[in-house]
Image 1 (cartoon, rainbow, N blue to C red):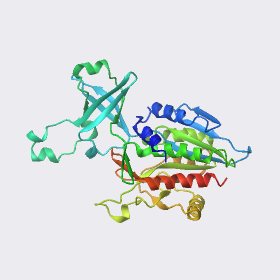
Image 2: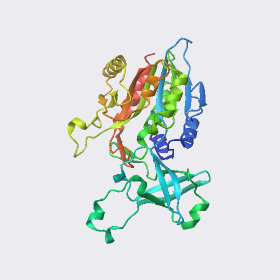
Image 3: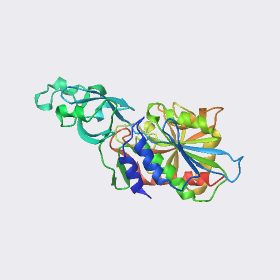
Image 4: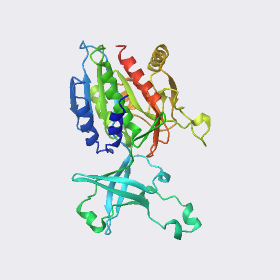
Amino acid sequence: MNLALLKTLCETPGVPGNEHRVRDLIRSEIDGLFDAVETDAMGSLLCRRDAKTKDAPKVMLLCHMDEIGFLVSHIDKGGYLYLQPVGGFDPRNLFSRRVRVCTDDGDFLGVMNPGGKPIHISSPEDRKKIPQVGEFFVDLGMGEATHDHIKVGDFVVMEEPFIEIGDKIVSKALDNRIACWLGIEAIRALGKKSRGAEVHVVFTTQEEVGLRGARTSAFKIQPDIGIGIDTTLACDTPGIPEKDATTTQGKGFGLHVRDSSFIADRDLVRDIAALADAKKIPYQRTMLAAGGQDGAAAQQAAAGARAVGIVVGTRYIHTVTEMIHKDDLQAALDILVAYLSEF
């Protein structure tokens, strides 16, 4: 398992609208794997693997490159940065974080905290309050000189390392650099075989703010089958009822049936489940009451497509401690390779 690539993907910053660094990394990694590669107007990377015949079905794998983060919206007189989120954050997870501010001229490390009193001088009532995202600021330690280096629109990501603990991987941005890794590694594993389908692997932009890059790229490609590759919840942890767990880590990839953006094609779900059973690839069916993923964009593009999701259960999602099980990641890779090999 090429975890060195996954580590590099996770630690490369790229928020919605600023995925260029991730895209450049992927482009360098996929050299020779595809027959055609292009970047569209939205910044998505469209990669095509040709079929043996012109009338072959089009299969599209959608792998979004962006991670949740922030854009600098204001710099005050003292050099403190105020931010607008691009993606969904729970403010309870933002306290006392190290961050990286990314500019055209280089990166700057800083710390994020909410405005207000520290514990030594705060009242019991103060300590009960949970600040809103807009109340947090970034301190780069440069004071007024911050104005010489940072501008409104520069982007900010959390600064946390990729680590392995036991059978697990922990990192920020596993949502959704997992999918980028799977898109690359699945085509690498196929090699020159299985050319019965025209396979499009699209590394999409701005998923975290509304599936935007997936919509435009799917409209262009107009696939017959769309596979949204993403993370999903693994709430198999204390304090959450079993019925809300969604997935259990170590029990295989997630065969995604429904969320608020789409309902998977019934026959695709059945076929992938049967293939997983035949190949002895562990899986679990998954549904979400809310949230969406790029598979929905493929399903609804132009005249429509059959669509399904292949997902990896992730604990502590949208935090800097996102956690996956290595076996689930391997199962997701195995089913993608097995399915594409069927054509």
